[in-house]
Length: 114
Length: 112
Image 1 (tube, rainbow over the protein chains, first blue to last red):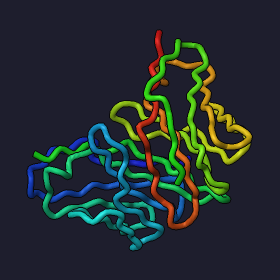
Image 2: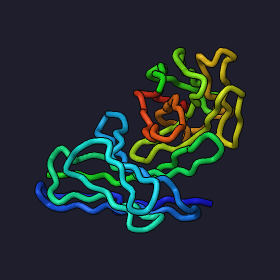
Image 3: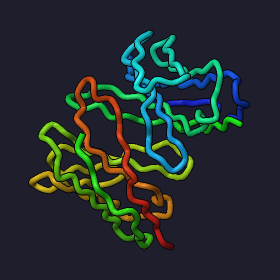
């Protein structure tokens, strides 16, 4: 069966510090990978998605970046965090089956920027 | 993707069936109905999806009306662990439409 891991689970960082969040998927090959952010009391915002190694699409311009160095690894980074980067960061994966691709989410990382 | 409308909150007694409605009157022919739930401070959990036929899995049943303008998620024997926010999403799963758009959902509370 497939599993998705995210770490760390929680993170408190000062403004201006760098960020690196990691997501890995087990039990599947060549998944589509996604980074979402959920601000407090709000819906999900898609940040990045990737259909393969080194292929990253950005949905929203911001000071965040994403990389996919391996097939089942997705990394979210920032060189300098802003207060507005606080939120719940979710990684998800999907694989196309017939005409659908269901997205499955990880446990999330709660980031607080102070 | 078509917009969905859900009641903001519902209560259900433990052990009874929880029936969560969703209206999607502008759904297109190639759009699927997906249900997710989110328990506080956890990532969203996929429950079930369907196109036009009723679907059932180990978690729930999905009943889609014949005109596809509405659907109902059924949790057959609700437990306290089913307390969560439930999201109904309509989505065409074609390349270039990767984004999942969660609305405000229905906050389901299971009463002991």
